[in-house]
Amino acid sequence: MRLENQVCSLQPSKKLHELGLNHPSIFVWEYFNDKAYAVKYYPFAVVRDEFNESNLQIYPAYTVAELGEILPDYLYPKSASGHDRPLFMTKVEDVYIVSILNPNQTMYPRFYSKNEADARAEMLIYLIEDGFIKTNDIP
Image (cartoon, rainbow, N blue to C red):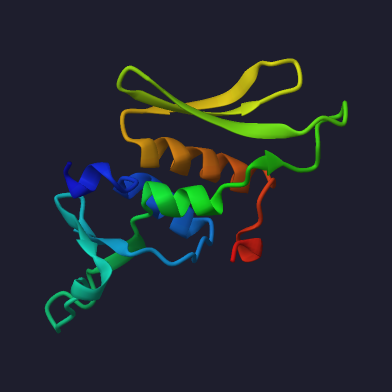
């Protein structure tokens, strides 16, 4: 399996960074521009020099496991009915689905991707943007 399929893609990585998520990752995206970027193992990434210093941007490339550690098992506060709302993750054929299981057994919102890390990252973005998670509360 290619490394790019084991980490969230560049766009969710950028968005999580913009939202203030500073959780460490063992991989990073090295980004020069939309045509020159790559994911790398952190200790071997980031070779800075005078040529690329001003153009290089670094974004964490979170793995499925890292996102699993960050995402909560349940959403709090509980629903208006007082029930827990667990996160639900599954794979149907070659598509990963991450959703919130609501008390009436509906799953909303749902995030789909052929890359499991992307589906998890999109759920994390939603949870941060809607105030369910605060980035400074993530260890």
